[in-house]
Length: 490
Image (cartoon, rainbow, N blue to C red; front, top):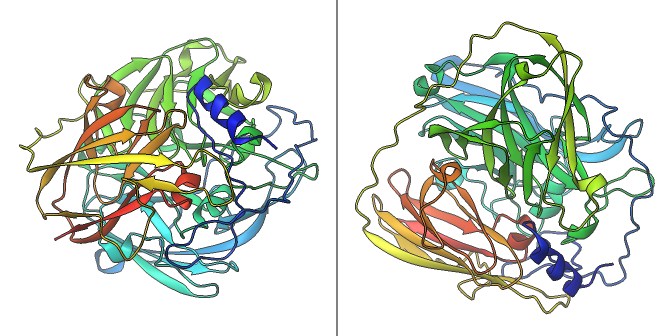
């Protein structure tokens, strides 16, 4: 097992994160409790050799509503155990939405109401959070608002926001880390007239790809221990280890999301070819951004367009990860392989202007958020926001409805990366370490990477719903350790 010192040293080597707490999560704990350690737990390193590019990368199925009556799209979804072929020829036990690993795709439209009845057929409480959505507090999937085993509840989403590539995942406190790791995550795509008017790739050429790391025992089963960052060295794309994906020689829109618990990824094509980033967490960027790499911390999304017409049919090009923190390049350095297998017509293009964001209003208030955590080790390690552990009975900040506030978010740790996720709103990044953000961070965001000692200044406008919401580190093991706080909009 790695020591805390080894983990902290590794995280300083490159972007990425992990803090070995030794905590094994079981039942939902009471308010103010935190995960307890299992000192005797010793997880063996995976002994299975994994043959890369043997399995095809699946595309998550798009759910069909069972009713569209009355202006509402109605869905049903069941959280249940299943087996998935993550590794070639091996069935792995996972937790799923509707039996899919990762979960299915829900397609929504801005301004149109949508409901999902979630049935919990697991033996643990769950809470479904639609990450990046503006929803009333009772629909937000808060950590203590759980669905008991065998019960169900209806979530209602009014979709009062513009187009965006969102995702949904479990948020039951102290359990979200293991639940998401074992598969409780899916995709939620909102579209609107602005997005639909653009000649971007659509249909089969618009592909969601969830990327994450994992660890397996010698029987091909997922091994989980909180903070076990250094041993999660197998990369998955849409639930398969190092798959291939057959593409046509034309442009594709790839909706990338990092669903890892702790690992930050830096994704690039192996030949260094151009990718064009067109979107981030909250929708399209103001203008396309040509780049050779995209960095995503856990929970962040990026929409990129790749033109495979530059490659002859018969070519394979690997999507790489260049952040190798905590593992060897032969495991962490490759994600999937695109195989160009045919030609296809292509009338898509990327316009020079994607959308016009409204000017930021004059700020009405400022706040400071400092994220820190125990780095000395021990079974009771905690995460803090402004020196406090999450308490569902405490309101940490009070925000006036309609206010537009500037929040200064600082990572107070010297060695451990964090990121920052704000529920309810999409925000704009004003500064990173006193400098203007780069083009990749010029759009709407709900999650932002904050490296050790960094400060990010952002502005958010709270003009939708009133109620109590969370903000927290989305390195999800850290939030499970208590690195969360609450604000009330009133």
